[in-house]
Length: 71
Image (cartoon, one colour):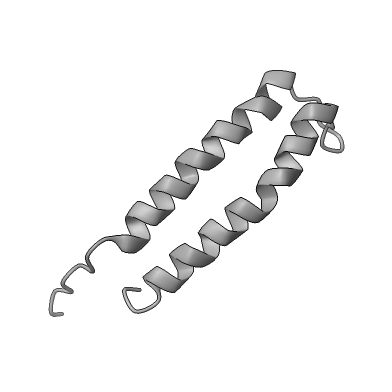
């Protein structure tokens, strides 16, 4: 929805930034999700992945709105 894309993008970026400290804590303390045993590298891989997701969200939200085709 082009009208809400920017607001949604900024909201998602804020969410990704807000959960980043929790992911750092999880990686440093090796906190495992309930009923799952993840490798430690997975916990650390989330950190740079979040930067990629923030960049991707920003790129998508800041892009030019597409022209909608009639029909």
